[in-house]
Image 1 (cartoon, one colour):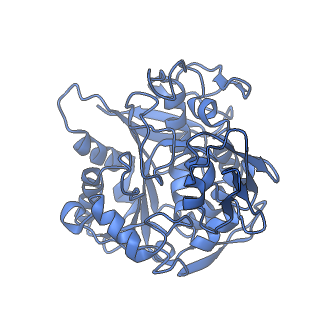
Image 2 (cartoon, rainbow, N blue to C red; image 1 turned 90 degrees about the vertical axis):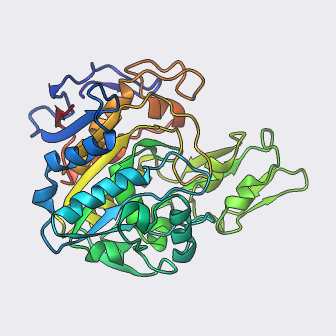
Length: 398
């Protein structure tokens, strides 16, 4: 989609992309094919089967060769979260990979925060509890950065703003090919979560995640803080304490800016002060995505689900109501184009009543309106550095 973006009210002035050649930023740019199948099933064909067929149309057999060790990157969700990509869809992906004679494994890296995925033992148990067992998905689970998040590979990247090397989970680096399976959603710090964030933040090791989060710091508001203590519970560095008046206080000498307290706060009492600018986190995520994709040119394909489009990340032990109706599934070998296509689709949808999307009409950037962050910065930066194209040709499959 092309057109202007007004950060004041989150409005994009462009019209919705039409079937066939879709409008996109960058006049004259080469358009990457993005395949799409709608959530609605007028022909009574399962969305599971259609998602698998979409992956085939997008070029799965060209990406994966017989004998390849294939990393299927996904988010296992936290216990209590219900918005992550359902295991039955992942099983379909696994079966398509196995049919090509390859060897798939499910993977993700450990987290910084004190949830259930900060070490490989708890991470695997969480995945199993959420339905990602061998019996359901027919593939083993391998945590990319190992038992304690320190099994990583320093991958050299060139020409970027923040890093000249990034630390990526070793299992992902050593895989022959990759399928990035993403849940499209909002995010409290990046505005938007799609394939770039799934690959870059998701496969960065624990130390890499800390480096990515180093550009912002939280500041609780004493007047609106209720003293519930949720921020204290979620802080991974014990940087937050409740003062005498039950208001949260942050020790910025201990804080490394992971942002978990911002999302944990039920009263919105914790604001982010950016040390540089709000786009720096997205740029760092893209640089780690570049490390993930390094050495896998022509060996990576993405499948993104724009269903259950929640306003928050899947890292939480809850899922808020979807802000728009289910849209469908996208597939592409271009990680930038697939994010742009999914983003545009949500922008052009109507916000649902009774959710954070209520009152947000087609053309309004739902992600910006909810988070206050322009989530397109990552796509722009990724395109500038050759990770893909924001211009895309939308190919619809029934």
